[in-house]
Image 1: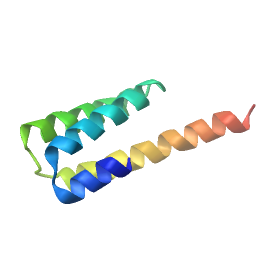
Image 2 (image 1 turned 180 degrees about the vertical axis):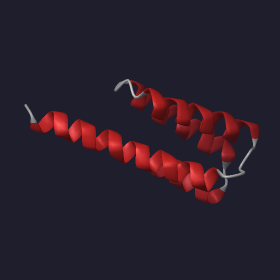
Image 3 (image 1 turned 120 degrees about the vertical axis):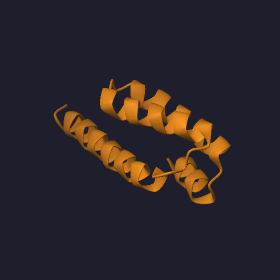
Length: 79
């Protein structure tokens, strides 16, 4: 996540696309379809050099990741 944020801030789209791909792979373990779709879209846009609205999209990604973490924490607290 830190690599995604750093690459986005630097507008390093090659690193951003790679970091988003790695993050998407990690998220897929949890079968989070909407988040995975968002990450795929962001990765494709970064690969294409499209930075229009990237900050807003990364904010949405952050919210979705936090929601996933809350779900994981809730599941872990039940065990």
